[in-house]
Amino acid sequence: MKGFLKQLKEGILDNNPVLVQLLGMCPTLATTTELKNAIGMGLAATAVLICSNLFISLLRKFIPQQVRIAAYIVIISGFVTAVELLMQAYFFSLYQALGLFIPLIVVNCIILARAEAFASKNKPLPSLLDGVAMGLGFTFALCILAFVRELLGAGKILGMPIPVYSENPMVIFILPAGAFMTLGFIIAVVQKIRNSVADKARLAEIEELRHGHHDEAALTEENQTETEEVNV
Amino acid sequence: MEKTKNHAVWSAAVIGLKLLLICAIIAGIVSFVYALTHDTYLKNQEGQKAEAIGKIFSLDAPVTKKLAETVYEVYSADGKTLLGYCVEVVESSGYNGDITMMVGYDTDKRVSGVEIVSHSETPGLGSKVESDGYRSQFIGTDKELTYEEIDGISGATFSSKAVLAGVNKATAALTAALKTNGGAN
Image: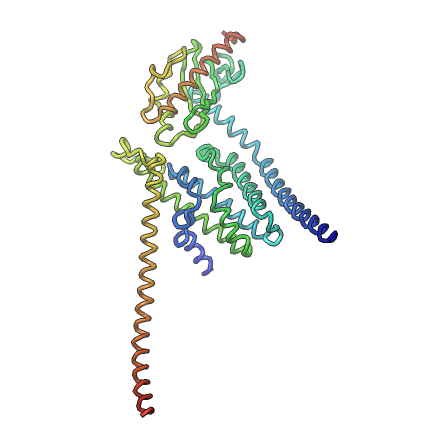
């Protein structure tokens, strides 16, 4: 359980696939014009990621090294197709809203990267949990971006317009240029937080070492005087 | 020498067979999901079109009769009174892909309503073609319009022009269908 919480924290914050690893930028930028679409895209990709990680991990000893990329693509596209068919039947309006980007989940770098870096080298349960963690991280990044873009660019939250602003919002935010700008700012904020956390940890380390040195220095001085006495 | 060559061929064959097996399993899974979901998907599509016709004619259950490809006569729920026509258009010149719409006409062959069934235009911009203000411009016309004759949506020229093109195509299709088939009129 503790290990899973650590994996979860890594997937969402420390090693977020979009905001830290900078993977899967294309669907991130394209599907975040509305929060509703971002949630749908994130969850669909998470479903595929979990299934593909699990499947690839189960088959990791069976898939020959020479054709592993081909095998991964077949498995991933199979699950994406299955998810698309299920959406066509049970989530029709979301399917229409996401349109072309559902099949594009096949070439979402995150899924291929996790298959190669994790699922092919780990047991099924950790791989499944990695799929959950990375998928939730992806969804989290999409939601932050979509929330900002929909709010500033259309004056709406989840489709509901806010009073004064929605009549004349800053349209650039729902256009591609705004997507890049917003994403850039969010990544900058994330890096700032990561650096300050890392800085604090390093400062604490240095403090500890310094205290350690003082004690050491005191000991060495005592030793030196002792040795001098002996020598004399 | 011979033994190593055979071994190389055999390992290549094994790799190929393993890949084949993986593909077969995946194909099986996909086929299963397809069989499970296909009927519901078709129902969803039909349901959307019926909903669009219902909105235009303010009816819960309009009865339609096919006049020509994509052109339908619309009757009242009891099937006796001809209320008008509707034409289904899939316009491919949208900014971000196809725009599927349903154009309704009254018995005088004037546009009585335009419903956007599905589109993938930019939310907040091109998606404004769904607004009442934009769509109601087409009501009452019985000929093809030019872009100058309507108010496009500022910042969404492609989407506006696409819907206009769709409506024009619908009008042309209706005129052609009535000429060849005569219909109830």
